[in-house]
Length: 369
Ligand code: FAD
Ligand code: UDP
View (cartoon, rainbow, N blue to C red):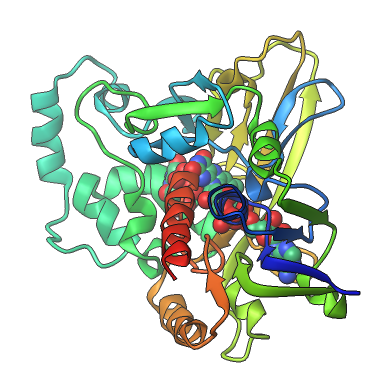
């Protein structure tokens, strides 16, 4: 006898887990959540390593949002540990405050300065581009070529294997530029990590009598064993359609952890390396989680091509990939009985809070049907 479900949910990341919880708890629907990885939480997965340090397995996940709705929803499943995320850049043999602000500008000048002087200087350095069409133009229009070359050009090439001129303006546009002394990485009203970690939060989200979770399962292997009324798909959209329109580009990553016999390795949670090394950044998440321990674990991130055996971590925001994605989006609209949601299924460079908001909106649509 086949197991019967109202919903088959492909992916136990934020998109799939939030939808499973809403459908089960609010609508009483029976949900099967499958993930081909051996754990829940998708890319937000965290775990305690052999040295006892809580690490983010797939790169640092700094939760931040301006949405009360998203905070209220997730707060049902976790307490929060408030954090002010701090990032430094290492280049030219020293650490620089980042994102670029008045402190960075003073470091550059090698003497004290003022907001007025920084604004006047940037006004001279900026290239007059009123409507930046790509990431190179975006940065040049904000800070000019010196800072573009110091902080953005090579990091972006390493990360995306594309020149910034071949990426949407929104990619480098994610990084703010300030003329005050605000060193925070982001200024969202809510910045905090789940107190007990992401995986613990996901366990609570998925802990419901109407939710069954099957790990190490590709949904395509379920065959006749399972029947369902509707599918929620949160994996790669081109893979769903067997790459019929061609392959969408993605970037992958290799995460190399190292445990060191010191309390802290570096002066901040994250140090970016635009111009040195093959890795883009070194993350010491202990700074953010607040964990106290005599040893530390750092994770180096090496950008890699996506291919067999690799995870697709990033969609590539660019005009060519958007044109290809649009073809898949059209096919997805015609796919009755399937809802495509999340970062890979909608091919959007979304943060966690945006994915949660998207899942809550999709739930309302499903409920109204
Ligand atoms: P995912 O978490 O990718 O979940 C999709 C799941 O579907 C995966 O677990 C996958 O195994 C499963 N799956 C796919 N295909 C199949 C299949 N055929 N069968 C079964 N299962 C399948 N966001 C922030 O807000 N702040 C940050 O600081 C931040 N840092 C990040 C750093 C890195 C390195 C990366 C890669 C992302 C970062 N993000 C960050 C983004 C965040 O990871 C995503 O917004 C969020 O995890 C997306 O959730 P999702 O459910 O859409 O996708
Ligand atoms: N970026 C850069 N230099 C930096 C930090 C970021 O050039 O020191 C650019 C780069 O293209 C990167 C993008 O800005 O991919 C977004 O950075 P973010 O830190 O938000 O990346 P994510 O955490 O999503 O990998």
